[in-house]
Length: 298
Length: 126
Ligand code: SF4
Image (cartoon, rainbow over all chains, first blue to last red; front, side):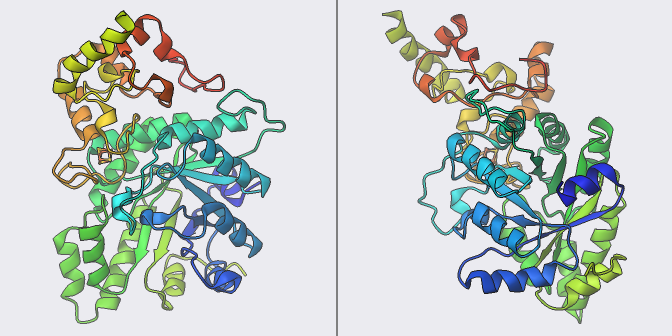
């Protein structure tokens, strides 16, 4: 049984997941290095699928590489690059390699990437993909063709708690839950009030759905400005950016901000863990985890 | 004959109002009378995570997100209650074979309700 399933379904423990850096060159040695950094702290790591519409080593191959290095992958599948045949093939490929955690996403548009001339696929959408993953676990492909034995997935998805239309996001979380998602990793959110409203709303209408907000470790105001300007669906209040840019020690202020956001997120209803994206690549990841009361696992 | 003519008539009527893309399986009534096929990602079950702070589309910055518009309309427009109830139902994948055919005929023949044999939902709605 995957650690994610075990912890989220059978315990009250807080789970920690992390974004595994995209894999380009450098082979397994590079994977080993990233894995060694994350392994002490995290229950599972995201194996992304061409994030921000940039090509990298594929989701399945990355997930396998993470598993080989002792990490539990959450394999993402986005709807942008593959049709329903290829998506089911990804899912069955994951099952073949004992990958249980799969996460279904819409995917950033091709225009967000470095090959904006690419053809968009979007043959199915993320909610349909969640439902198809659930259908596979009942022992058939979408066509009705039997799968024996059926794969055993622990299905998740992603939602943006801070992008319009806000009230609809809560209903959409319920929709994803009913389609088969057991937990949602949430998009980066610098509006604590919006996060609070979203989590309270989800706790009310989908009490069994677990939420894992995302926290980003940054070193200065610059990446905050970048996310605000360039990443669709992320809005960072000017006051927040100014708070970091005006500080005499930006790295320290950015760290304090991240810790505040993390503690606030962990205090909210329906929240069962945190997803951490590390853009600092310094020793602050360890301090951050200690400051959240965590201890290294090995 | 009708099968040939109707797609033209349907398109002529629905194109100017809803920018109809002739997917052949119309869901307008359940999507706040906003066509989800005009979403650049053709999402039929709600908005992506990229909607801008002003409610506009990630891909086309000067267009309102189709789903932001659909939700506004669902909340504010007078519509039969059952249409509003259908807003959150899980709409199945598009049947690409129906592209270009008349959804009116497909509605009458119930062809637009056919889903792949393995498709099921936990909603119990359909
Ligand atoms: S922002 Fe809205 S219209 Fe644009 S791609 Fe996303 S869901 Fe579709």
